[in-house]
Length: 114
Image: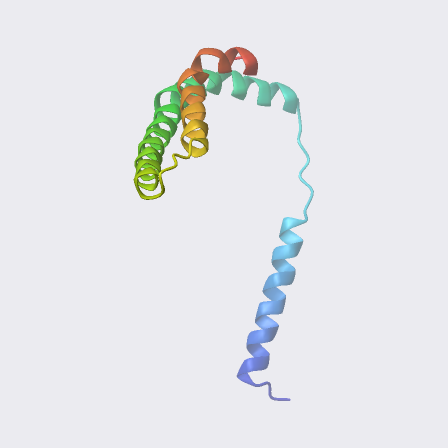
């Protein structure tokens, strides 16, 4: 019995999917105290996470929100010149988000518990 190339490819793909599904469904058993290992890892990484979020994440979010705020104020002003009505909603929301993200490091860590 001779198989065509297409049939061979389909069979190889099917066997690959079955083997991958079998490997992903194996149960992993943990020996020892898993909770202690997770807790010690978290305690070791807690300071690094706080430093990265304070020095990288919040400044990036602040810069993006500031740029969006200035762009939205400019486009709102252009709409004001064109239509005679200034729309305050979007700049007010962006300003609120910017002020929230600028002050978040002051109180965020006490809420999270770090």
